[in-house]
Length: 220
Ligand code: SAM
Ligand code: CA
Image 1 (cartoon, rainbow, N blue to C red):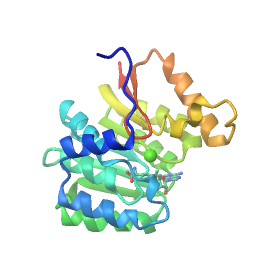
Image 2 (image 1 turned 90 degrees about the vertical axis):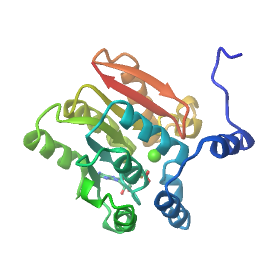
Image 3 (image 1 turned 90 degrees about the horizontal axis):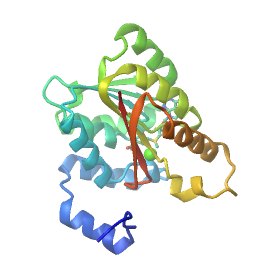
């Protein structure tokens, strides 16, 4: 019975978690530690992490990119979904936040799969295009400063192979993208990238209401 997506109230979201969440103890601990930070809301939801892990496995990803690490939950969930020898190149500008993640990457035994690059992501991604070449990655997760999403998107699209997936986070921005009164730079940037993706014939897309909204982008 459904010709439209169901909205999740708190009760139903709790049901989703109780009925389906399989969270590794290191992920749970990292989520609890991050919950004590003022910026905790930046972390992805655990059900989103599990979805991304499934996606990574479904496409057989071995080489992945992350733009926006924070305390490393999304990094860890993707790293654990990779086969041995898999790799996440993870970009962030914060030593302070990413150092929290490192402890849990080590605890979970996947630190060898994570190549953390501290510095502006635009520069790191430009370097990867030079050193690794276009199409060298299978999967990318974009979740850093929203004003630069379009730049990260273009760079990641070059870096993923045909059939590879780019996941754009926060595309619904707590609903603000649909409110014309919201005219701040971040909301406008997200609205702009959403509009661009809608008619981008280089890719297949699906915008899904998981977490704060994700757009899955498949490179044609
Ligand atoms: N994916 C993370 C998770 O699951 O917990 C959340 C990422 S958080 C929303 C955004 C991150 O982008 C912050 O850690 C911030 O330091 C980083 N960031 C902001 N500007 C950046 C830039 N120019 N280059 C790289 N990272 C940046
Ligand atoms: Ca996010």
